[in-house]
Length: 120
Image (cartoon, rainbow, N blue to C red):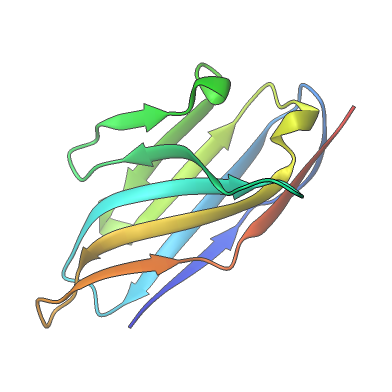
């Protein structure tokens, strides 16, 4: 069992910054991909950013140049630094982690989500 705990959401004015973190714990042998998703009211969940074990990153077009995903493998933690925030970034942000447990089984886990609200 792998648990994810997110932190760092909140309320910020447009143009401001927020940082999110997501720490994984439990039976973790290795972590492959770590991702951040978001879901705004009435919309489907969308992938925001992803980072591989090798450090390769991808971003959805709407956040390129504003958001930065990073990870600390020693802490099994993924971060999302969000700058120049816009009201349309308002959503619940979820982290998602894929890897392999100590029993060699693959796992995929989701956090419970953290609310990010950007006021205009």
